[in-house]
Length: 308
Image (tube, rainbow, N blue to C red; front, side, top):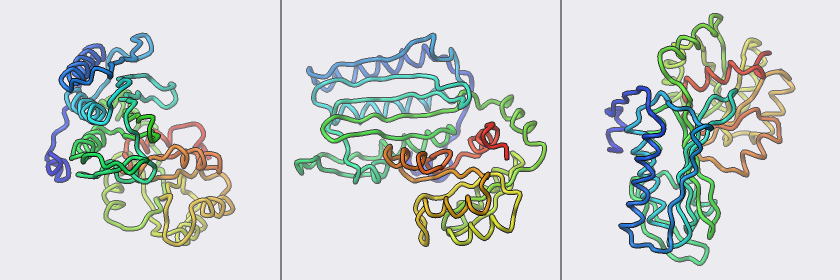
C-alpha cells in the first residue's frame, strides 16, 4: 500500500463521518488487539467526551480508522505493561482542527530515532541498548494516509515512559469550506517558501493556485532575504528549519529586519516538541510538519495575526 500512496494511486472519498461510531470501532479494535497479544498487564483506555467533540467530521472515515488501527498495532507491539489509550479532542475554534491520538506506556523513542520513526523497516534500541523488532511499514503508511486526508501526524515520546502519536485533521474539508477559502482570497496572496529543491515547491505552487495564492521560492537563506527585500507584497514566509547556508533563527532575525511585520513559519520533516517550543519563543508564529497542505496554508493566511 505504501507504493500506491507514493504513486498517488490511493483514492480518498471524503464524507460526513459519525464520530461516535468511529470511536466505538477503534476502541473495540484496541481491546481486541490487546487481548490477542496476551498482555495481561496492559489495559485499554478511551478518552472521549462527546460534548467536547463534533458529532461529525468531513473526512474519509475508513482511512482514518485504518490510520488509528496501525498506530494501535504499533503501540501493542512495544508495550508490555501499563496502558494504551485512544483519545480525541477538538482544539479551539480559531485553529479549527480535531486531534486524535494513540498513547502508550511502552518503551518510548529516543530523540535520535524520532527522525526515522516514519521511515519503513526501521529498527531501534532502547536506553539499555536492547534491540527491538522493526517497525515495518505501518507508521509509514499511517503518515501517508494522514497526509492524503489533509492532516499531519506527530509523535511525542520519552524513552522508558512511552509515546503518543497525534493525528491532527481539519474539522471540515468539504466543498463549502473550499468555497469559503476562495471568497476570503479574492485578492491574490503571495507567500515565500524557503527550502532546497524546486520539484516539491513546483507541485505545491500548482495546488495553491486554486486558492489564489502565489508562491515565491528561495533555495536558501541568503536568497530569502534578498527576495523579501525585493518583493514587498509577500504576506507570509515558510522556511525549512534546516538550511544549508544559514541557521533558521538567524534567518528569522534577518527577515524581521527587512520586514518586521511579515509572519514567519518554521517547517520541519519531523516534529520535535522541544524544537517547537524554541521556535515559538524565538518569534516564529507557527511550527508545521512537511509536506505542506495547501488548504492549511489558506487557513493560516486567514488568521487575524497574519493581517499585515
